[in-house]
View (cartoon, helix red, strand yellow):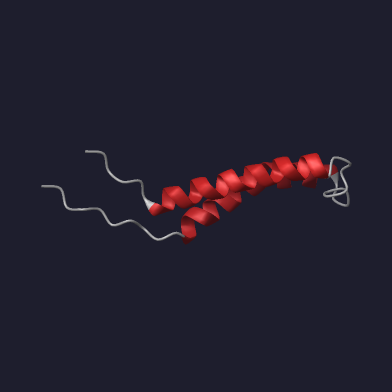
Length: 72
């Protein structure tokens, strides 16, 4: 019997998926760099590289732990 997927994993996966879709949509809608344009190039790269990971970590951190059933 497979163990159920923990709520923390579900939350982190969902946040990662939503952030990925959001970045893709914003990239298509705002293709003229006006979204991150005011930021220096090095900071734009940092935001794009670390943003999804940090938000995924935050989603997993906030979700409640799924208690495990005792193993017989």
